[in-house]
Length: 195
Image 1 (spheres, rainbow, N blue to C red):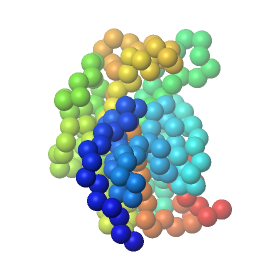
Image 2: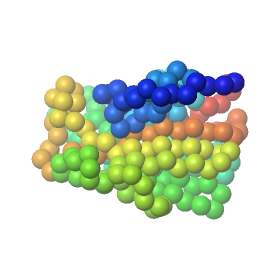
Image 3: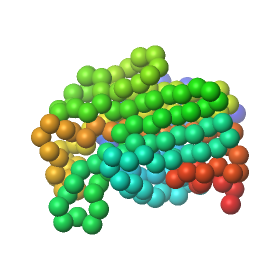
């Protein structure tokens, strides 16, 4: 199938200015956080089945996102305490990926004030553009991770009560898996099962 060549300049939508890509079929920018395999915001998941759900976890804890033959992905959650709220808001601060005998760690560094030009992405791989990384293992997975802050506007709207000295830098993640088994587990992984 042939795709048209996208020649018109396009910008990412305001809501996902740091995590979008060009759809070659429609020549329009697409938010990675709106596609299956996304883990973004307060974590909003879009499962492999296309269904959206929220998994809040607990701040300071680790959770299994996906576990399958030769592939395991854990996420570390951060959060803030909001007095009187039913639950504390949380975000994914870091992921650890183990595949075969290899390991990869990507995390958002704690930062007091956000600056788009300052790199806040901690990774144990080759350095790339500030605050974003794309890792692909041919035939197995593709992971896009972008370090983003909780904005003052989000804090105001959702009453996150950001404390001075921490903008709760976290990751917006987009996963694509190519060869999962039907015995896949984990918060995100189970949504890829045929059942």
